[in-house]
Length: 197
Image (cartoon, rainbow, N blue to C red):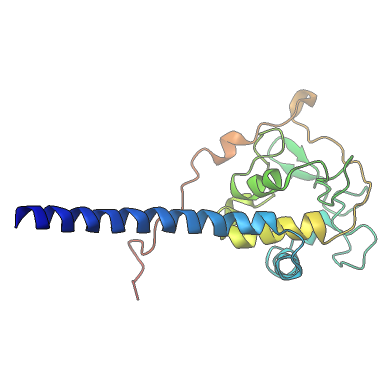
């Protein structure tokens, strides 16, 4: 009887182990599928929706706020009202987020663009300064952040527009990391004041 119990319990353990491993592989593959399929028209359309309707990326990165604009998402342009942004002691210029290889994000890998949204880091690993609201994007689903990446990398035309460097007092590059030192992760659902149902 004990040997049958051991065989049964070993079998159940093996089934549970395989299920857990399969679930992890499936989830990893589903996340990676978005990264592998950046030319998927549905993903690009989803990215366009987030960039234009939800994220209001044009509010900073495009003064004319329309995909018909020949400078769509090309970043700071001299004479744009309210720009560059004054953030404390820092002067911040909206980046060129078109896929231009020299002046935009064209030389960034898709993963680096994703990391800018999820972790608030630029290509060099530096913290992205406000007013870029990356702290809100970090809690979006992988699919939605990859959709933004797809739209920016594959869904818009590259525009050559060299943006001035952000500056801090003394002409140094701003270090915005301290501005986010108390940023807390989103708690798991349901949190203390949420219902599970």
